Image (cartoon, rainbow, N blue to C red):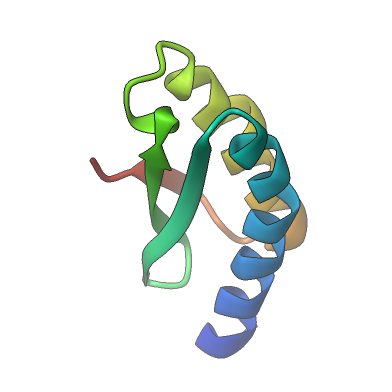
Length: 79
């Protein structure tokens, strides 16, 4: 996958996750992709202070992004 395809895949993954975050008053945005395998996102709204945000990142966000773009190795929340 080239960089554009990776970004499109990540955005599709975020679009799949977003309704769940929105229902709790939160959101997520893509910050950057490094070396085609490291993703930085920003949890927003209620997600910034939620005690479950670490679980959301691992079980929800990272898993879904890797489903859409298997070459992704890490997903990190940038506060």
